[in-house]
Image (cartoon, rainbow, N blue to C red; front, side):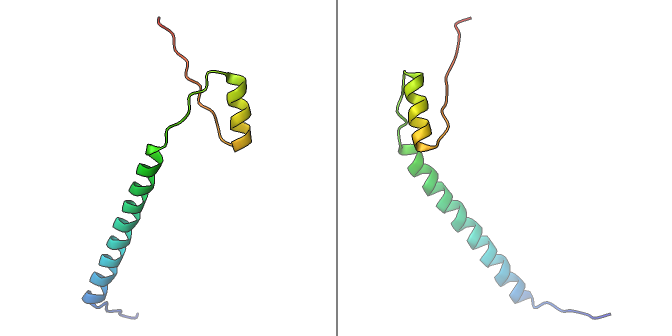
Length: 69
């Protein structure tokens, strides 16, 4: 069997690097989602027009439906 010894300072460096990368990634995602949240979605009352616009942009549509009962 081979014995491997790991330098504790190398382990600490790897953990710090991974932690920094995770925080940087999460901060970047927060900025992107905040920028996307500022964009207002247009309200379209005409279903046919909404379908045409969605197909042109290749995006799904959201249909809100409710009843008072």
